[in-house]
Length: 440
Picture 1 (cartoon, rainbow, N blue to C red):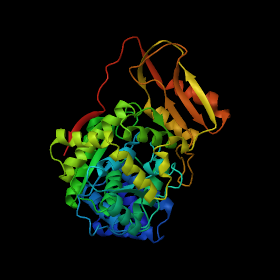
Picture 2 (picture 1 turned 90 degrees about the vertical axis):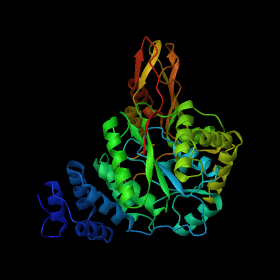
Picture 3 (picture 1 turned 90 degrees about the horizontal axis):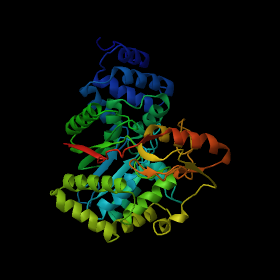
């Protein structure tokens, strides 16, 4: 079906619903009118759902991304000649990698201006995690963001009225209308805010598995390819990794708990898979920036920044620059903590063969660590701490997890939900790397 003759929003919704392709002028007008309040949230939600079912062409995706970018300003980082590279994840359960990765890469001489988002559905958001740090401000002006990037080498903020504001509004609508797992919408969302940050290159972490929006490698590869194609059209080189999201990353799910785990990694400890992903993505960022094109030497630089404490020190500086309590790095007990706890005990002896990331992600939202409506607050204290991992041998009666709860009333149902997420085997399951393949 061709494009509609009328430019009314209803015509645009109907056209996309019926498989039509919108012209550049129509897409640009759609975003502009939405930002001026001439298109309601429920109308835009209907259009997003039509896109979810019908998709967008490459040309439409490029135009939509640029329109969302142009809803605000694009940073230039004048006076900062260091390479500017960022990493973005498509969303996972227990994915706290940005918190340790960004300061670590900055400690290796690369500028990391990161514009992040909040939780989408069952996946956690970087901003929600950072706001678990007392005093940390994620809502800064573009000028303040540029100043911190120039002085500290790294800053993580959310979209503002100046930087990709259209994405901030669309992001919230997608979260609560079930239109999140759309490749063109994911692409436009990511690239609009990354282009606004004034990057030289972008490294993607495309999650694959039951706990990800891309459940199989074919879909993940398609998303990676679309990100590369749109990025190329708009002047931003994109590369990245496909990584496994069938089980939660690390041992913690929940905002303050994940900050604590990220700090452990920066202190040259932490769960092996959290550390593995941090180093693998750090290598890609150093290579993409041109700071260290050789993968082996890039990893050595990152490991030195961990062992020397340079990465942790850079995290402290970033937190302080954002008004947060930087003492949490040395004293994680300063982070918010829940008043109520419940332990989930193993009902049998055996190997843990699987841990359902989606189920635990949804449980964490139910506990208050995520949101089901755009206007909801999250509770930084609550979450799930895993005592057993995939491949662990557990005796009957030993702990599988510890729940951090806002109320003891939810203990029994939460314990039962956690237990259902575990799979068992008589034989030790084969463990695989979190990194599945590289693209770009």
